[in-house]
Length: 378
Image 1 (cartoon, rainbow, N blue to C red):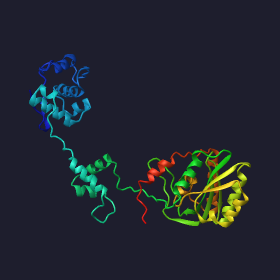
Image 2: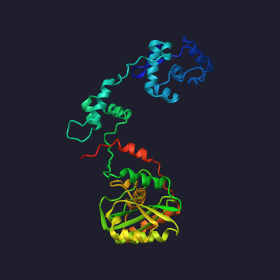
Image 3: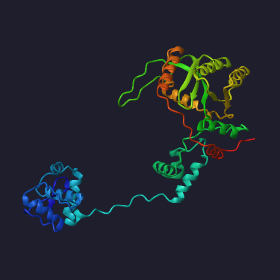
Image 4: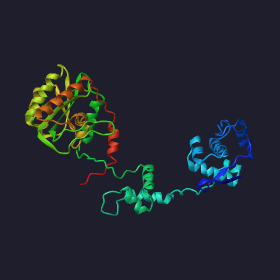
């Protein structure tokens, strides 16, 4: 059927125009290829699997006596594949082209007991000095591969490298205060403006020691890890929950004097005849006697204090987070004036296209989530 060729592999010899392949499928190959004098075997029968057609092309092309490299290049295959099917055809005949050799079975799946053991160990403290499990440490302890550990963690939604912080409020009036503030967000009073007021203090004017490189394809932007500090400023902000606009002002300090000046700015900005429902936190400045006296002189104002350790209920905190990420953190400021000008420009751009603040969580859902936290220690 064949003779030994180069590299110890079998080279087929062509005896006639029609090959005695002994198989209906491959006979049809010859009907379409051999009788028309084609060496490459452009086999296109629709009822033939692609892998069978490729093997038949190898056999038909090799029968002309071409070198393995030429056959591989002609058919767009690798040389090992050409060698493999030349040898298989020479040793086992036509039937070898229509079936694959049996292979060793793959690795058996990890036993359910071992999976449960890995999950249990992950949820427990590690036995060594580390604070949490790593993939390699778990793989060594469980006697499996790192990838197996990663698959188990992914299947059970385990992320031991991550941690979430929390602070449970110890305010005895937490439920009443939280319900009051959520009610202002969800169902604000008629003819009233709901303002979320707070200050972002100690904003540093940091200037990098060297200019960074801009972003480009294949490389992220750069900035030096060290910096020069040119002072700090405080941003007082009042977020209008109904339309999303922000009234902001930068000041050097955040005492009650500056807070009262900011309240005067807000008072002038709010249309006459509107009640002002202001949500503030428990910072001492907000409860100063002079601030209380200011409230008495402005009866349309009402302060709603967030619970202790409940500043997450203050909507303006989300605005502070956004301006920090988008404008301040990666900025380079040569002076406090430069920093304040950047903040003012951001406020102008924000107020040009404001988005109303939408609160979605109900008081019942908040309380249900808080019940999952550990109880306060006495």
